[in-house]
Image (tube, rainbow, N blue to C red; front, side):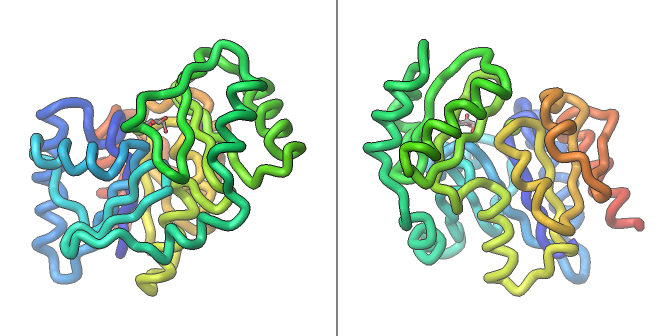
Length: 244
Ligand code: GLC
Ligand code: MG
């Protein structure tokens, strides 16, 4: 493994102890001869994630992918990878997306301002089925909006440019770093993680507390389903990979 792309909440983090557990494990890997790179890949914004890292024992990552694959930060230099942002622009019109979603989806509520960014329109839409989500996707398609709908935790709806999402972001980052996808591992627990597991050739870890729709959405040969929750499941999955 040369690059590990992991979701944070519910995957490596569910409170202070989990952060310490992950940090101890990861620092052990960092002391090896050729340590892998760490990329957090989260629905949180970059700012919110940096705050969480500063308040917990979570190790500083080599890359931070925030906003469900819509922004990539190289923390060491503080630079946002603008080449990634530039690829998201074509065909994306956030104002049109917002008005179509507000018109078409009933009982939907916009998430707070700090959860929005120019390439991520986020909403609370409770208890929707696959069909509800597919129907909204069809409406966006018919409206000519080049947008994708990502649904997580039976509550969070993100509408993103077609080229965004966590999986496309990590595939782009791996390519720009010259890392082959079969040397990439990913881990996650909810709907917005599905795209990471769908990247060809990656090794995936699904933790036992994952939402039930995730395994069904991503069944594939290189996926390890841990019987353990959160960070314990991640450590089990990475350990198996590293000794194999
Ligand atoms: C995080 C973000 C939220 C998003 C959710 C699912 O909770 O804060 O905006 O909808 O992840 O991707
Ligand atoms: Mg999660």
